[in-house]
Length: 45
Image 1 (cartoon, one colour):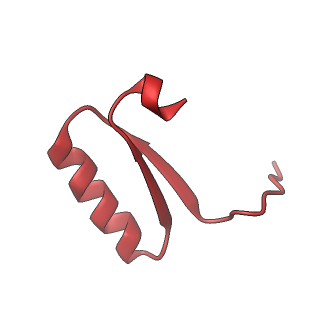
Image 2 (cartoon, rainbow, N blue to C red; image 1 turned 30 degrees about the vertical axis):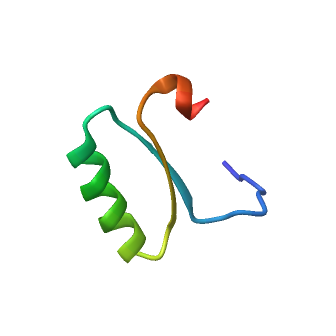
Image 3 (cartoon, one colour; image 1 turned 60 degrees about the vertical axis):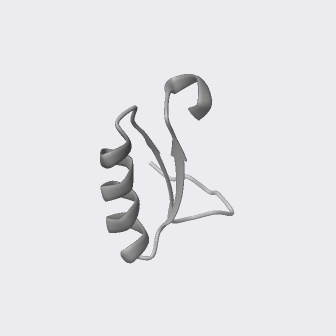
């Protein structure tokens, strides 16, 4: 599978629990990913 995107290393995390979002965001950002956050499915879309 090959995804040709101009923004590689971008991760969207979706969770309705704030502490989960915070922990995942910190871990992924420290791993040099660009992280986008959504608190629910509707926001993610």
